[in-house]
Image (cartoon, rainbow, N blue to C red; front, side, top):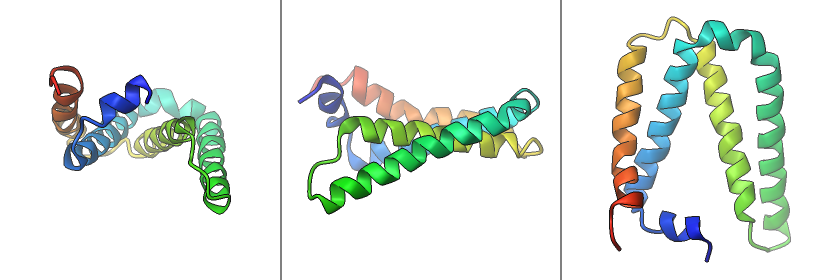
Length: 122
């Protein structure tokens, strides 16, 4: 069992879901806050996000049909692709209301997972 797999197994499903939602809200609000700087790179970010998500989907389907286990790096690549996609969605929403409040809510949603990963003993 790898180091990060042991760490993530400490999280309850509710804390893991809150962490994922918080991370996506953080990326959405950061994309909205820095939309003027990100817009000039949207084509490249979209291409990279599409390639990463396509790799994740094909890897998952291939392992499903071969009845094997999906490797951990496929989940990591899919998460990075999804994060880039939410950053791009945020860049397309520069008029997002309460973008700083959304950022604070995203940070607050990730705090229980940070506590469970780094400060909880068992």
